[in-house]
Length: 509
Image (cartoon, rainbow, N blue to C red; front, side):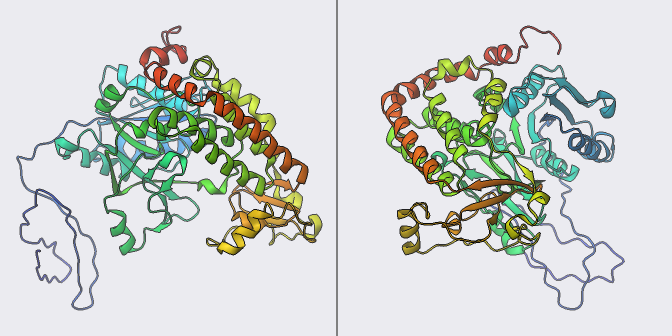
């Protein structure tokens, strides 16, 4: 504990006495004003000249598909803050590779020797991110880390600077750890959505969800060490040595790809306050075709990484997922859940022969048509205010008695529908608040509406289809899981990815 009293007239820069830094642990600073005080600026530094520094060069990998304005915004921020700023600590140590999965970016809008755009076969987010990994692995100018970032997340150059300086002085024993960035809400910039997470066989737990980072107490709590299974690819700084050791990602097209790759780190992650990005909160979007990938990819991950996850457990997860969609009257999503299951049961050999984009196109028929919120003003008497569910309090706790009753009646499916207006809701509401409503309007962050209507026959058909699929699970699950485990090494090899991305056919895309 170091304690020092300081006084200044505000014209001088004052420094404390020298502090000996311990080998382990964390340092914190507490400032107490003994009279009216204005703190203009503060920092910490060292004059020690013999500090060992790591050689750090960061390659930023971004995958994009027709999101030009987001990519141009972020590249302009990077150019001004680091790439063209000789005063930046990371100047000359950062370069960017953008995988253009749609082939729509205009290179003249990104003129900078540190920014490279490659046109890529559209094989989803994982196809684009893996392409950037391959580019950095094969580049003449070697990087020490590959930083994967979402194209539509807002980044600040200061974040990259902190990341770079931290890596420069990181102890060797932590050098192969992955540096993760927290996800901050774009609609509430002070609120943290997630800072690392646990996989938990698919029942995921986001660490420090809804932390207010303007709160000193929650900032301190956010630094507490907890176990992480993965960090999202909205910001994931991966050592090149990690990629050499663990090879490339699994070709899951979209969803759960970052989770699967993170599981290979065996908990070796570092999360730091001040390393983060801002992004639209995921619960503000209707899931759409992700309902297919959430189930298919969950099954693949557990098959590869957890031999103890049995068919019985998978059926339980599937039942919970389809029951949730039935309770929300989103019966087409049930079809996506079951289709994802059946495709998983076709096995790893079938999986490796598929074109992810072709599968994605076929899933469109199971999606709902989204309409503008303005089309529903006046619909069955609804006002514009009633069609604005955001900001309204959502119930988190439901009594056991209420749960039992509503589950027994299938959330009111077995009872007459209540009369009155449809219910306007966010995409992920408390399911029990939909009890006996005849119609629910799910409104996303872009003011588009999914109109879902209750149907007893659709509910019954959904459960019948579920029990039929359960028979297939009993017959094939164990064999399919073994096949995925056996082919895992093939899926993550450079040879596989070069063929998958058609890089073995084209010398320069």
